[in-house]
Image (cartoon, rainbow, N blue to C red):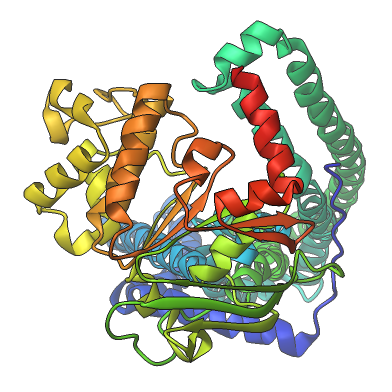
Length: 601
């Protein structure tokens, strides 16, 4: 049920360079000033290690000569002042560099987060009904704070490492032609191991993305305030915990295997490195014993070993880190490259919607081979109410999504006032529509926001919000501590939780708040009691006089309101007509009506 194998398509060098350019462009445009400051301070700081080594060598050599009385105290103080100045300069450069990096990282995280959220807002509704979209979104979001900056900083680090290695290496070559190659060679094994297992770690996380999302979902079931009653009553906490732990144990097995292999290879790499450094040290000691190098020269070797090893590791790991970070960046770019639907593309719809016609409309979800709707035909005009009836999965909600232009039909036409809806921008048409979905939103905001979000340009229209709440029968708002300004839900401190029926009344108020010519009610009374349902139906009758109304309901007390009723089965219309006409047919509608009526007898 939850398995979702992923494949890793290898990228060409050109594609990786394209991703590298795109990443650097992302970093630069996030904050040009901080990007330039970081680069310049990093390169300037890279030349300081060699300068420190050289001044330290001179100071040690002068101290040795001072012991023989050939150097003055003033000369020693001069070299010490130079050394201290280099330390102060290094601290200053480091301070500016760290500040620039921190501010650049913050700007970059904000910029990338905006791009991800902006992309998510342009994806089609079908995309959000695809689990792969969520996997891509999670992979992109998980690394938003570190990976883009990691690519840029590692690239700058590479340039700095070249400067450091070149300057420090020049000092080491004065000790013999074989010293620098041995020290460099000693740094290579650890880098190879780090690179190899870094890539394996990435692939392991990539494989685990779907299962990790399932594990997080199972954990959310155990911590949900809305589900805790069912979980406790049916007592399936243990089952959820077992499944949650089963995923963890699967992750753990893979992690243990990876850590053991990485540790074994890491130890072998460290052993080889130690032997090579030992060989280089033995050769230097032999020259020292013969008096061919000074104390200062020996300090250059001892300190230079650490410096060169660190620099070579940084250099080689830099390539590895850039490669790995680009793998993660590919996740981000893959998400940003998902096809989008421009809701503002097309002509702008003007005026009220007087009629809606479905003409041989069919719909099939992407990557599937079955139509969920087939050759659907109906017409509804202003002042009329159309009800959709059918069992779950019959296609009722799909018709709603097509009618509201959330989906585009894969066959046939939807006509608005006799014109093809495909000509017009979905956004402009949707401004003439208002809807309450069966899975309506419960926004953890104020009661006013929950209503006024239907038209964000009217968030301050208190009178309009009050009228909408009255139409929806949401009188309970008056008893809230701060009235319309009361924060709702349990997510934030001070929030007041509502019952299911109260949340549904707010969703109805949200529908009424928009002055739309088409009203869509998807199970508008599902969470209401009998009296509340009666009041809501009466309000619906008042709203249908000069608008187009579409109803989806399993309650025939609501369905009877409609002038025309369409019965769906398997994505096709099997019956259509008024309530009385359909009862007279003694078909599927009459059967469903009798079953429900029998439940009240």
